[in-house]
Image 1 (tube, rainbow, N blue to C red):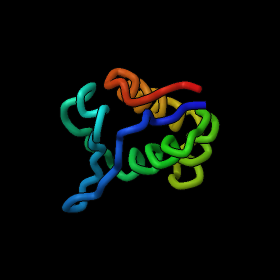
Image 2: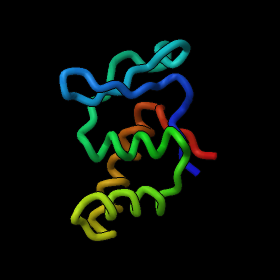
Image 3: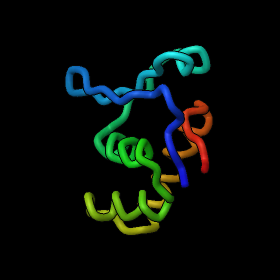
Length: 90
């Protein structure tokens, strides 16, 4: 199960989706992450906790994309979150 670490919130400001660290998370991460609509959807799923299969289903149900393309995009998204130390695995 993949989940966003505590202390990260998603906000929409001027039609832009941004992830902002709060509290202790702001010590670990200085800045914001800007997301597109699909990134917002995946982030929201990860806030609740999701498997990679759940994320693939989320994208393929919302967009005209096959599983292979969805997996490629999700892998890149998860890698970015891991590099920024925003993601935890349970």
